Image 1: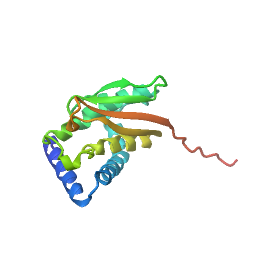
Image 2: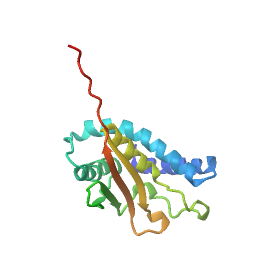
Image 3: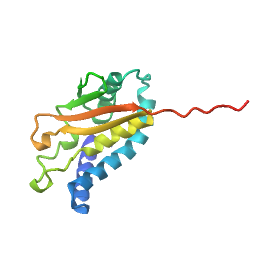
Image 4: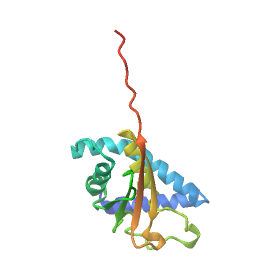
Length: 168
């Protein structure tokens, strides 16, 4: 699928959700949930196509998301910055966001709409499938007048893999 077709289709999806839901919060939740469902499936494609090795740290994981995943699926490479001394909070800063190529601004009545919230869900879902619980939110958005689009990722803790013991 071409990037332009995807971006136009995404715009139509958001427009339809805005018609279906009165509150921006409901649209944001729906976009996040859809993104999560995409992320839990997309991680398999990502791992198969990228042939990346297992990341050993949160910073390595954040770099992998920016340098490989965003480039592979959206054709852009956000910059990454660490936002905490603990090393578990990162920002992905997008100078260009391809999902808004055909969007000039949000309508005044949709001021709290997080137009690209699907991306947060995708990242959260993909991370969860590799046993990394994370909180992913938009911190800045060009559509809301900010200079850049910034996605915040807070790694909560590694989810434990269940280990099965053999009966001898």
